[in-house]
Image 1 (cartoon, rainbow, N blue to C red):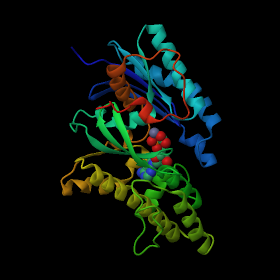
Image 2 (image 1 turned 90 degrees about the vertical axis):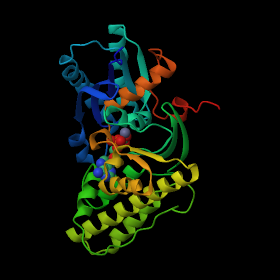
Image 3 (image 1 turned 60 degrees about the vertical axis):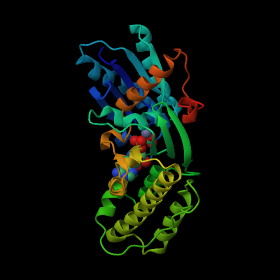
Image 4 (image 1 turned 180 degrees about the vertical axis):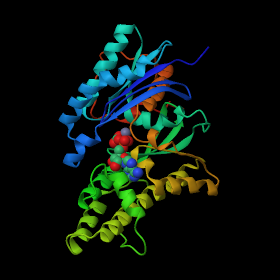
Length: 340
Ligand code: KG4
Ligand code: ZN
């Protein structure tokens, strides 16, 4: 029997995304990005985000559905964590579609989506157990992925997420929004020595902290001649990227060491960062098996939500149609460890 066809919807932040997915394959997808709206404010404005999702979701879904002539077997939408207004838009649309078509529905944890992103690649072969680093605008966590649908949290940030640190650093350096890609391209222009910014909590287990780094950058910015010239901006972009990537790679290596796992996955928007990707890829030289998703499946997309939803459907069946949106939601409540 052919694998089920899954309709995925993602509206938890600033991307209205819809995809049709079958195991190992994206059949159709469309993403409407809100970057141009939020750029003006230097960050995501929740009210504008939900209005834009409400305005575009129908059109984005129609674009994906109109080219598909086969059947659909399951409908999945991000149910949390995220911005509540956007979650409600996607969830309501998805539940209504499932009800209207008589299809089962699953509400998906956004970070399970980031973990499941590799499954959209037909070439992907790495199987759990694996250590997974998820670094996005709202979360930075290290997981022991013991099986698809089962995770143990190993550590994470105590304050700001890595992506948030990229975004705030870009604001301080007047590089615009979203900050990650802007910091990366300014950093790539830097040549020669650069100031070394602190790596908070580097030696403290698998916990992380990025808010001190943000303060250190601000102090550094204020100590330089104003307005900052381009080479200073590039140097400071390099310095902050170097510190964030160093912390993430150090903690990832430590997680591998303490668990003895041999496989590594990364996901979330920050996993689109080139120096981080290079650093993770280099783990292969030390005998680790590594999978790094294509950039467009690191940032928010709906195919990953469909992939995680299918895993969940096969484990626990459909959700009731009144499953609520949740702004906060612990991944371990969605993908708990099976007691051994
Ligand atoms: O996963 P994602 O698309 O949305 C959330 O779930 O938050 O992640 C967005 C985050 C933003 O903070 C953005 O600045 C960061 O991912 N990001 C990057 C890069 N591309 C996106 N950070 C560093 N380097 C990049 N190339
Ligand atoms: Zn995300």
